[in-house]
Length: 149
Image 1 (cartoon, rainbow, N blue to C red):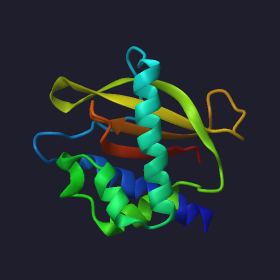
Image 2: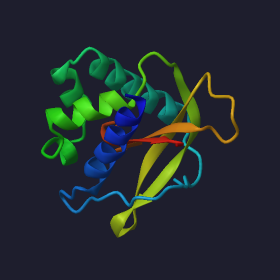
Image 3: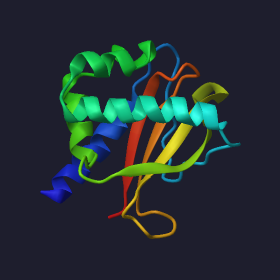
Image 4: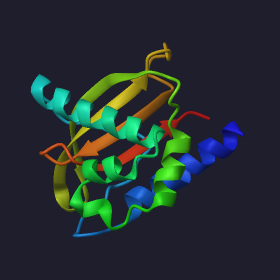
């Protein structure tokens, strides 16, 4: 069952990030490099929105999920995508900010990003990460769970 969830999360992340709309497409890479560091105020805003998004996924609150997503991705994100993504994120494990910075996507555009690790993951670097990419106003552009096999 765990392998199925991980597989689904990987497929979802590929679908979620490979779609193009409005000229935005996230470049896939196994290692996500974040440039520079976000300010504490930005981290607080983005983290609050991400935590609200995770809670909305847990509660299947489609209205709240929609309100937190960027207009640039609302058209391509389906209920099935959200269902698969929620299967790839463990709601029982607490997440905390691991790294923050800016991620460059196609067309050399950069967006704020935060990598989350699970609090109970003591490995260095963390075995499981969840990367969230935001617009400057805090709306979510994409979420990419990364799990070691």
